[in-house]
Length: 184
Image (tube, rainbow, N blue to C red; front, top):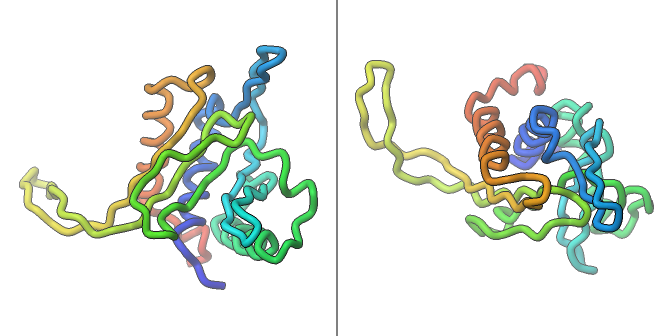
């Protein structure tokens, strides 16, 4: 299996959904009720010949990084070949769109109703950054960076909540520590 960056973003996102349950929620327009989900059902936007589909990896929060990588590869391949089951196109609680696969740095993802939020993953590019060493000295260095645009429903998530959610993802990605998930 070819391991890409997307499963790392997916793993960080489903872990963040557990910490920020208001992002793993939906709003019912008719009843005006909010539903908070106990499980993370991750939609993955897939570009197909028939247009964009968002098949769902149910219980994605229960999967390891390797399990997510396999599930993403499998569901994307079956979406492109037209072999999805009907239940794999329903029940998503949060969606990721990998706009970086097309070279885009960022965009504004459109929500998949009734989900509360959708995360974009921009292209990973090298950029100059200020680096601080343990002694507090600063220098300029080249680092790989990625923009993570988040679109969210303001009835459920305000800007501060969105910022905390994205910061949780950022910290998880920056800390790394995926070795155990990869069996290393």
